Image (cartoon, rainbow, N blue to C red; front, side, top):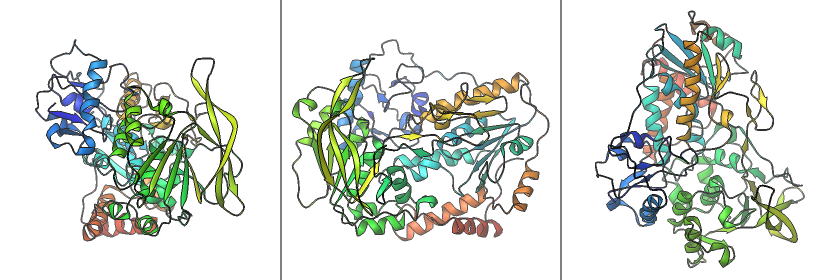
Length: 550
């Protein structure tokens, strides 16, 4: 097998288009593409050209001769996909559809609210049309959303998607308006007076609660907040994280739960080579945590984490991974069960910190008086619901797990977005394929819920932008002249400090400069006031040109 997809896969399908022999699947249009944990290279038809590796924005595709020992399972993972999903009717070349063009060449200016992956992919799709210019707004003075503040610091390969976003923001017609909170600093109707259309890509900003007594105690935190804390999100820099206890419990067993458990048990020396926030690195260096217990309500076969994350975990030999599950629950040829069974057989080194993967266990009550002291849990049993789906049901078999901190990682939910209709059942903005109404659109998690991977936002953006283009061609959107400069003047009068592309590039350069001095990729600036000072200082010095056509 010349090339292999590894666990860093982001599913944006750039490799599919680049492949000259169409040997990477599932591809857009294939069954299961939207839900796929990763893509796979067919060993029988790969011609070893390397086009896919060049196209991959996160460096997830490598020659089989360069696989690290912990990546070797991906040889079988890639090959087994084609044994189970043969693609005999393969077209010899990847098909790229003709680029759609707008019927009118009149200029169009679109505001994109949110500079995370969803917003950046929307901007990219829009800028394929020479008539369109894009202003990307975000309340933070830095872009990239969860790519910057959500990806674990020891997943630096995944963060290479920044290179793709740098290409997007360098296109003519792109402008940043960072540090502007839409809904507070500026209203939707104001944006529409200065732009032809507005696309919201604001994510799902709240975590789901456990719904058990005591979860409001100090020391009971959202895993999302902890991720923001160690990734240097300005809103989380002062989070009360106490690591003096020996044990932490994480409720939920998805990829985020594995991330926080892995960071809390990692050797600080390894983290010191990443872009983890300085305050988190200092706290983890003094941490007393020796064990992190990851709880799943259902069994190993129903765990929420993906196979690539599990394989990646198996590659870390500076921690113990203890799997608490019955042998019969780990039997079978499902790749995740095979990986878990192999982890369960690994010897335990008492000198190392330990991650415990525990199944069929649910929280009942967070314990403590002035702060968390433990978690009362109950064993669960699996029973089918009316649709035959196995659900976890509490039993009376309970116990107490002593812990100094409890983290909930049971999913996200969208909160209402000002000026947009909210669906209380799905926790999303009510929309039709991304269209809220002509002129107003939505993409990303706010549109579809908290599902998918970084690259899933690409196909989501294509659908939303398609709706916008439909409305432009149908004359449902006023194509009259728009000039956002008046809005910029109004924001300045309101005391809003706007960071443009030049300002962001100055911040980026300064963070990388500080990182290089310490032997790290970057050292993040976490104080919003310092971020805006760095942006303004370098802009006033004339080090960069402004971004995009007007």
